[in-house]
Length: 198
Image 1 (spheres, one colour):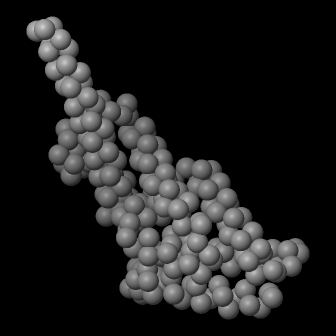
Image 2 (cartoon, one colour; image 1 turned 60 degrees about the horizontal axis):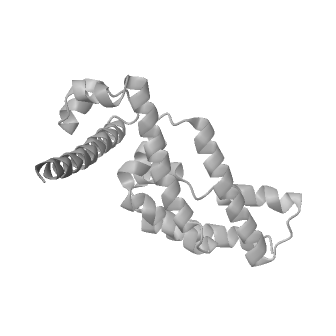
Image 3 (cartoon, helix red, strand yellow; image 1 turned 45 degrees about the vertical axis):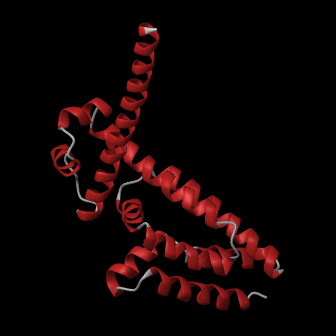
């Protein structure tokens, strides 16, 4: 009976340690994302991450073998976060997608800014954006019964690019508008431009 109790305690401790380890890892990644935003994409040093996260440099190196591995995982973490949000929004109609996208940028401002400012793996980011744009173009063609000829496809490629995190970041920084204002304006612009194709 004593041996059984001991095994249960060990199992609980193991689960607890695993959860604590995951939480620490997540805190390191989110701290790096936050510092990347604060430094406007400038270099972030391990000692800065340690100080801001409350996790020692030694512990950080236990999770990540070197600085490159840490940055690579942070970029993957942020990209995955952004992708999950957009895959959820992709089911909306085009106007709703534009409005909800910019509102989501505001709600998750730190992660969105980290996505814009960090030197993301360009291939993964471009592949995701291409997939999203293609889905939006197909939805517009189907819902508005627009001719899918080359000329219209070319114009739609420009139109769907209006929904993007970099535009949100630039307008927020330069003009101070929030995501709701931007979403309404972009939805209006898309509707106006699409009407010209019908």
